[in-house]
Amino acid sequence: EAQVTQNPRYLITVTGKKLTVTCSQNMNHEYMSWYRQDPGLGLRQIYYSMNVEVTDKGDVPEGYKVSRKEKRNFPLILESPSPNQTSLYFCASSRDTDTQYFGPGTRLTVL
Amino acid sequence: AQSVTQLGSHVSVSEGALVLLRCNYSSSVPPYLFWYVQYPNQGLQLLLKYTSAATLVKGINGFEAEFKKSETSFHLTKPSAHMSDAAEYFCAVRGSFGNEKLTFGTGTRLTIIP
Image 1 (cartoon, each protein chain N blue to C red):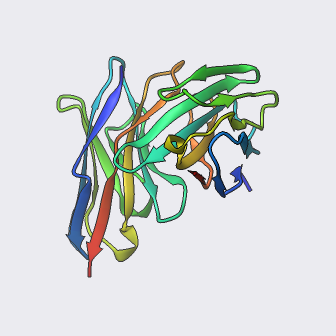
Image 2 (tube, rainbow over the protein chains, first blue to last red):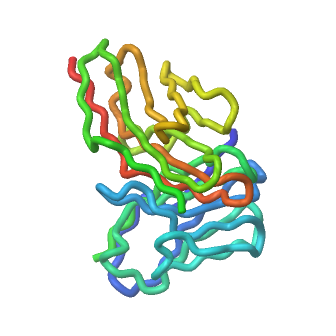
């Protein structure tokens, strides 16, 4: 089954404790992206990747890091999480001009 | 820069009534336009997309949208609302090839009144 998976689905952590949210797709897509969803703001892009070893900032990259060492994986790293990073996070993937497929989301709470 | 504006953060319609969710876009290049739906506690699912072919686009679950360049609009409609249509709907715009970034609207929560 074609899908985008994210782990964990739910995470509660404390300020400053490094964490990684994993994202994996099995569709051999070149393009992958991370978004955060906040009430009243819709989805905002954090980082995206056009292919392996090619990443770039989206609209709200501050406080986040990403890497793309393999085509299928695109982890999101929060090196020192803060409460304003409490949000719902989505990973998405697509071929170059095709529809983006979204993962199920990761709900992060930073205390 | 590209952007979308969704008019109305909350829309309520009676079951069986017409659903109309509004989206206006701004783009410096011919846009790719999308409508996504998010059911409670789920990820986003594509409803339909416009990619410069037919201006009237049909999607899943009986939804359709019409691209109107003169009005820079891409409104989503469904002739008869069903209880299962209750969800949040997002309009999104993407630039042409080489710029795959999706820019989302702030969303419209659709409530269906029995």
